[in-house]
Length: 177
Length: 461
Image 1 (cartoon, each protein chain N blue to C red):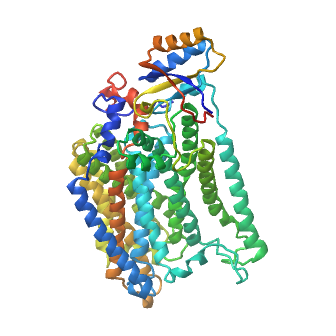
Image 2 (image 1 turned 45 degrees about the horizontal axis):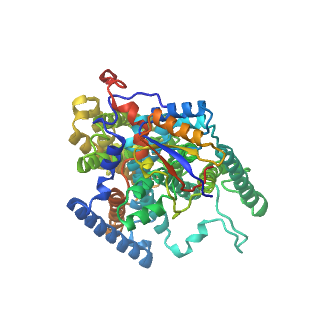
Image 3 (image 1 turned 30 degrees about the horizontal axis):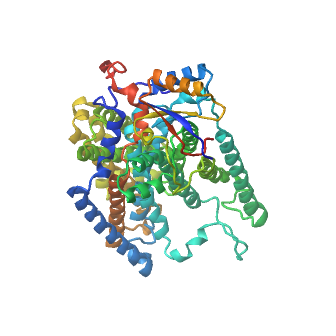
């Protein structure tokens, strides 16, 4: 969906954090922040969360369960053989369970990450400012229809006051969440 | 978040973010590779082709072209397999262990270390494939539904555990490595001048945006994947050691093997990381990123690990004596310390337990040439360690009428040279087309680790 955004370009992450505080303090919503590296405090300020850890736990647990089910069925139910004269061979399953849990967890976590981020090889993307991959930071505020002209003016001047090198408008579309 | 301090400034030269990007991307943007790169790539390709030919002979004619016999049924193939896996462990240890304990100094080295892991594990993975003999029946090793019972694998065998462990290790390392590279590929995509470069790195960067939620998911997923891959460092090489430890012959059947192998793997891996990063920083002038402080940290770790190796060797000798078993005593005292394999044994002791002790001396740690030479010796010593373990115990085990000697044939040596070529070629391609240092990670720690206010030289102790 094409929406117009007001973009403020900065060159220091501490300045960006202050700017976000000021903008939110004035009642405006920061839609997104672009940066060349992760800034942990931004996630708190924008109240962002992820459920990937929960998903990973599920994948790992189910990986263990499925692997154990297969090993048990094949070695105890389907074609039981005694190795080394031991009555119970299931103890050695621990090693395969351990390793395959990691494999299932890692692969599925990676796929979940790509899926949630809507990333795939060759996806075309346009950034509001290409410098944000290099050395610039960008604060995006949505220029929605219900913002009055004076509010837009206020946003522009807030961005400039808080240290923006450049304030511009951009209507590149991308998924935000 | 990260609040551990390391000796000295981590990234020298008071660089700006853009400067970091430009300096690290210089080798990729160079119009053509430097001459030394082309020569090295040529040598690597020749070595690789030799390996391909040797593998062709192995598969078409058979394992009889190797020097193995009834008694010494494992030789250079498994020695080299364990050697390469050991080297591969350093990437994961470096990158992931240091991530989990929040060590900022990992950011200059982790990308190269992980790349090294990928190519080392690829080289190692060749050996289980080609040693099968009838590689076209290779699918037998997987538990698939068959009409022979169905006959399943022996899930109690370390040889099967190896299959799962090595595949998992390769996959997990590759995914973690690739994930970390996505933001850096996006940098190249945005800066690309040529359409082709933009297209290729655009494909590789998966549409990376660099927005807040994207970074949140990225950091979370990376930490989770890293957290899961970290136990692999310990478990994979323990599993490999079980290939030997579950056998009954003296010198193999010992509970010290899992920790012994894991520590040895980290040892040889760190040695190889030193070798590679010293070359990298010399040829690409990355001294500001891979500082003397970084190399100092690694050499100190190596001193400590070398002490552990020495302790392990002494433990083996002590336990052999303490056990009262004449077979154990023979294997260690008459067949390693003295006897036919004494050269290999003492090379191992010297290169692993004695030479790295030179790193106690600051003068030697500061002398990068000395560090480089010692890192090569470490890997030579670790190769000899695997040779001593495999060949001495097999060659003279319980029954003297079954004793035999082992000489590698040209084919086995050729395969080894081929893996060296594969590794070298992989590393060279990595140097040319992938950012060697994790750009976004370095930027993340840049502000707190560049200025003198953040660090004082008193931290040097």
